[in-house]
Image (cartoon, rainbow, N blue to C red; front, side):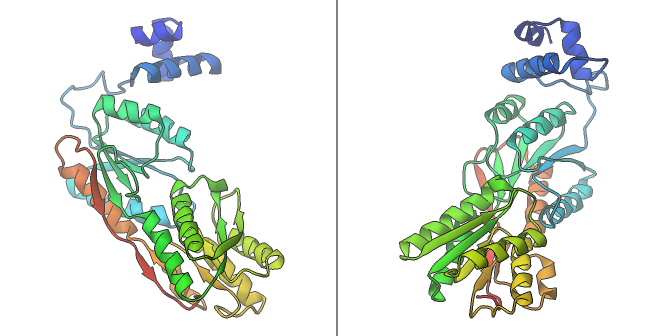
Length: 325
């Protein structure tokens, strides 16, 4: 704390109050102190006054959203597995913000967790630095397209995008549209889209329109985006959605408007969510092993000794052809 105080230009008492959340500290001073702590790699230890031999059962988990079913299934796999060893997940939600994820990780590390589970492979430099300095084990989930900090568990979004594009090209479609959400902040969806677009271009086809909403993915957002696309882009033969919620909304729009699927337009989603089986038509999608990914990441944290570097555990996603392509 002496070093943090020196870098921040404040007293050590002020640093202590910021770290403990005690008393009033102005927003600017708090920002100075937190910035200095991250600059030198200091993490406050909330357990410092307790037993030094205490075996902390906490595993920190940060997911990007809880507004769809994807990460609830991941968390179920994590919780079920950790429970076998008496460990407990404590989780936060970043809403696809790397800065919010960084804040959550710094706070979680102050409780000295047994390990961390983070979504994706893209993080801020400050987060990577503090993870390396503390030596905490990190399991990254839902992606294998990149370099993991310690170990990652998931599938290739690049391959998922490529496989869907190849399927639609083989079906004879040549003009495409894309529907996304979260204002483009979902970096894994971006990887799929870029891979999809590359295969489309290589086949001599084209993406003629895109719609990306600022809010969370939902059936309503998918329905609105699909209506807008098909109203203004009559040339669209197939629509690729960032996820199944959006694709289901697109399906509902087409059914309501009497648009024949897949004769007039084809629809394809991503994730293979369970509710798809209850829809009037089965949407073509990519099925992802969400529960198994959470389970594998938790099991690795339970049994690994020390941090491994660069381990990639592939749990492949599978293309499932439905009635919409």
